[in-house]
Length: 267
Image (tube, rainbow, N blue to C red; front, side, top):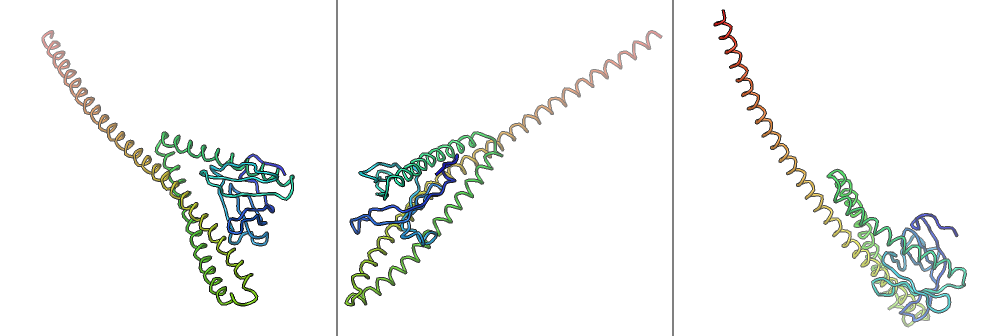
């Protein structure tokens, strides 16, 4: 595969084996990397539907484990323990995820630097940055809201499956039903972790948005006070110039009077 200038423009997908704590074994899952996110689905056919698990690679680290295996951690907590079926796919996934982590971190630093630079610029630039952050914040709030709605729908489905399973525990399908419920619970846990992570990111974004808003407000106040001070200074200068002009006019009139008297005596 070829990499473009920005890893966020890359989409890569394929099967990986993911460690599941509730089963205590590796299970085959379909993974998709795109826009800085690594998402897993139960199967390739479910892409675009409810994800099994998802993580944003910002602040993540990757560590090789055993043969064709690696772990992804964030905030010192393991998010994914993965294995590839062959060395070729293993190397590709390592490259994709490693570049994704680097790119996400660099983009975050650029955004932070851009915000700090905009705070030091004029009120027009500050206004543009303020509105950009506001729109970005509202977008992420909408995404978090959708994630919460998605989890609520899934919880209702989980409850329905659980009730169905209770009625079938004594049937020949009891073992299959119990396993299905266990899978549903695992999906719920992964989705809950995804929603919590989304909310945490939203909180951080809201803090940044609040700081930028405060800086923007302070910039407007400073500019307003500066303009008022400048206006007062201009008014004082105009008054001083007016008085000086009146005095000069009076002196000219006196000279003109004296000149007329001199002419009269000469005559």
